[in-house]
Amino acid sequence: MTYPDYETIKSTMFDPDQLRANFELLVDERYQATEAQVETALALRNERARLYPWTSQRAEDLPRLVETLRKHRPEYPPEDARIWCKPLILYGEGARLCHVDWTEKIPDATPETALRVVLTAREVQVLDGKSLPIHRLNETELSGFSATGAREEYISFFCNHVFGDDGGFHTLEYGVEEELPEGPILTALDEELRLRPSNAPAKEQPYRFAFPITRITGEGQEAPLHLATVAYGNQIFRSCFEVDEGGTINMKEDAHLPSLCLRPLAHFWQPKA
Image 1 (tube, rainbow, N blue to C red):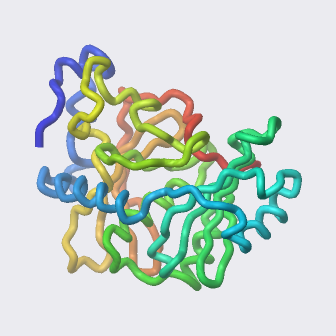
Image 2 (cartoon, rainbow, N blue to C red):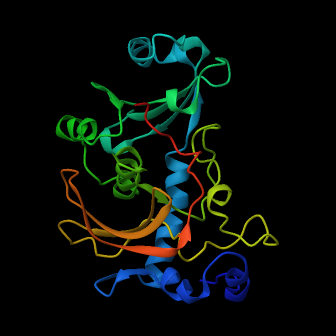
């Protein structure tokens, strides 16, 4: 794996004194990834984007979602919504995560009025930034993690939709070409994080610190470990997650990357208070 020139990166973005720590593939000595594991994760990340893409949908094709919109956003007509969905294979065939936004047609709508809803064969679950809706889904709908990239998708899904006092724990994964919904969802990692030097080509090798969610233990592990780069508030962390077969997620350890600081995360979804 090759990376952009360190001197270029030093001069444009980072505190040189902190650079080495930021680019190590580890949380600490106990939890670290090899170059081969990151290469595998990068290939899997692109496969996940191919298998589980965001696609635009019509309200009339999703009657259960429309019913939910009328209940939770009665002031906004469902027919004026922009709707995108992506598969959530861990909750069974046909399960999907839906993002609903009214900013295009409703003048007083804001990104904060957007809804995130999970549709499964039996359930309609509105996500509100708390873990309870996801735990409910896990109790009744979780079909396991045998599908390609299912555990990595779950880590991203859980982190991005469970919020602390300073917002969500957004996973940052670089190196994927994926079409995302417009508007309040993060449309380009570079836009928020300025991960490339200004003179870099549009399609550059993935940056070391924002490597994809990476499995660091073998298939035989009862609860596999994964490393991820996570934005929380205006800070960035390297975190190690353990996920068991029931969907219980445990952060084993994390490390703050002190020289990296985010601008406000305007393009991440935020639940309305």
